Image (tube, rainbow, N blue to C red; front, side, top):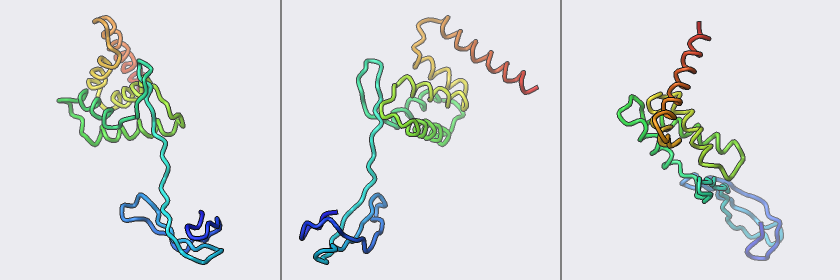
Length: 159
């Protein structure tokens, strides 16, 4: 850290403490050359997640937009807001853990469907019908059949 008085780059930290908002670290430093003191602030550098949409455009990941979409699929269903918050937390954590900074909207949709499938099957089907843009009744029925088949297969393994 360069001294604002003499320009020397060597200094020592005398005191560190978080700011009132808890988002920064305030450091008191002393220049090793001129012995004058100065304050610096340290913040975490975040790299935004970018979503690659179907039309190849890019926009910043919006957690609230994902939550709103999942909430719409859960209307009039016995799903609490906390359950949806936790599902969105899981999705966001999976995205951050991937170390990819550009993520396709398709992948985010698949993660959302997986979370909804664990929470409520009706909400899952609602979300999937919008997300996958079922073109006709047959594709919708195929999705339902796959879901019923996987449910019966899991019941068979439990026995």
